[in-house]
Image 1: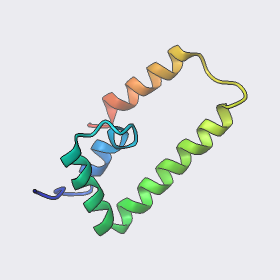
Image 2: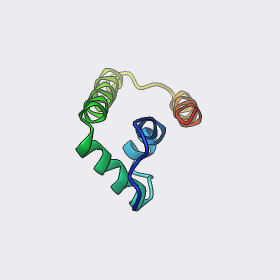
Image 3: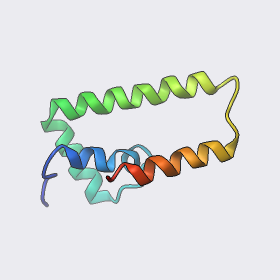
Image 4: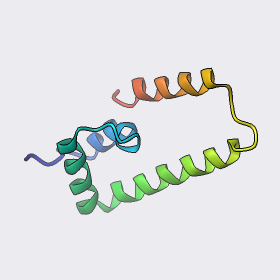
Length: 81
């Protein structure tokens, strides 16, 4: 099994990792990279925390489902640029 070539691949797969849609071997490669790269591990932690803060802010006044879907589609499309 080949490890991730560089940190850019972490960014490319970040949304799929968070949504748990990465194939098993890609998830293993992702996790191995996180164990070896403190910068990516810190980035993932900050990324996850920002999502928690965002969800907490929206808890009382959630956006329309259409906006959520548009936002997720945008992030999926632009995360592999």
